[in-house]
Image 1 (tube, rainbow, N blue to C red):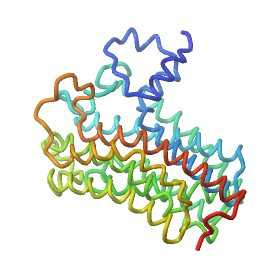
Image 2 (cartoon, rainbow, N blue to C red; image 1 turned 180 degrees about the vertical axis):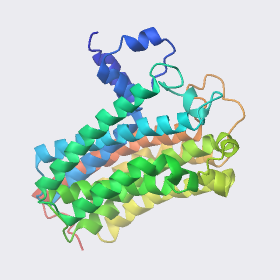
Image 3 (cartoon, rainbow, N blue to C red; image 1 turned 45 degrees about the vertical axis):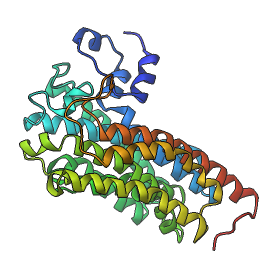
Length: 345
């Protein structure tokens, strides 16, 4: 078995589809893990950690090794959660009959690439690795109460997100909170070795990114709301209806930019360089335009990502937005460190 670095890159950039078990068995362990955990999506965790790192650097709290260990641990934890999601849905019979999840990427259990026991083994190994990094964070912060609380919260969400929280229509809210204010502020707290007076501002600064991640998740749940309704999965679009969910997601997109503009011009927490995110405006218009109309019954000719539709537009927007956000934040951090330009009010 050879290490397939090209597959690592592919798995981190796109959702891989594969039909041959022989091809699957020939992959190295890292490639299998990256594909099975849908790492093209879990990279949102890496971006959130990068945002936290830059905000910590801006406030003179950054330390590379702790940041790297915690970021890697959170990335693994996200993948661990996805392994548990697939196991839970598979054992509950959700993923049968060509369900939405099985159409856009490899599902090792449905495709019989893995047994249930193997899936649990991969889950446990990933979980232990993530847990070890959490223990490191506790020691690094001298068992800060804030970090203990975040560690406990994360453990509960990892175990209970797929069921029952997602079934109760709470999944979308949790996605926003975790990959926005909680994760970014949490990594910042670890680097600062405890709670600081600036944590609330850090959490607010993370809201636009959290909303961007939410837009993908909400779009995906709209895409599969008909299938979820049949299977009794009470996601938010199932509970409030497809049209209301579409307009809610439009509001999410508008808020992303509204909050950044607010943070630039009112408290001046960000410098105007953060307005570079407006270069993603064209993709924003594509996403809003798609959400303004019901999902088509059939994909347009040569549409590559079916059955994803709204989520594909949201993902397309997110890819550019998150890169611009990170680039803008890097420039913003340098301006804060080396100039007195645009002082915070």
